[in-house]
Image (cartoon, rainbow, N blue to C red):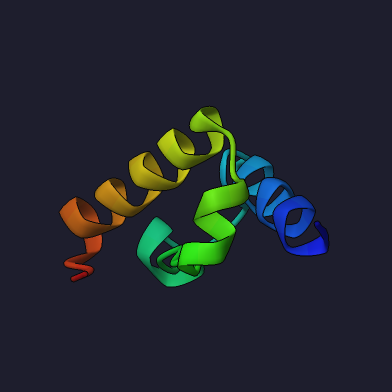
Length: 63
């Protein structure tokens, strides 16, 4: 449960504006375990996917 709350907080923070650095400099891929994915809501999974797709496009993140 703590991991889910931490992940939710990270997702909220990812939408905040930063004062310095590019997305690629300040963000990293979110890679939850299979057990964590099983407990996430559909909205949380969609938000993680959108975050990771943005990173793949802008920063060259790979699966």
